Image (tube, helix red, strand yellow):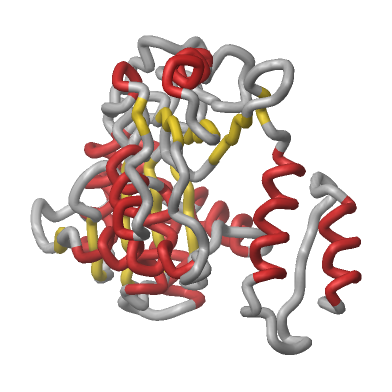
Length: 297
């Protein structure tokens, strides 16, 4: 992952968008706090601008879900998030989204790859030094405004939590969302709260890896919260630990999914047969049973 790779990828994406969407696509670009993420994001903005598109750069390192949200919020044609998610410190990566706000799937991936392969040289890619815009905090605030609406108005706010960002970018947005929704702010694991691309306190910054949230569980032993939340470095992955007769226990992804599914089913928002539940081969069968019992396709 280097500037040459990023420039080629951005040029290939623009070639695909100009061929399939519009001659002047709008692309939103986000980045996390890893080494060179800001540099790669600026390179992408320059390539988009040089190709005749409109580039909107997010103002600071932010969670991947904020980037995904910003695409539809701004009516953009695509989005790029510069992040290696929960990979080791030496890595970086490039997540690409189309205008529906979700990551690319076939056949878009092979279409973009074909355009990348057609780039003769990085030197041939136009990259002006100016011309793109930088969004303000209103994008993050709009995301928080939407996020808090998932709650039932009469649901309890009497919840105490410990949170770790694992040296990533999740702390500030999560705190804002909780406080705006009327919760107490989660108690942070202070040594892991601020972004740090070296990830000095964890061997592997994935909350599902053994040992990754040991510091959060140690803090939970001291503060006795209702649950422990952990995000991966770009905050698009969330792990939950709960107290049990045998100490703190990580919930499996299936278990978190069932809890979220139960919330949606109980919310009253599913009103007709245009609303469906979806599950994959890695989802618990319980979701399907719950939907069937509720009369939801």
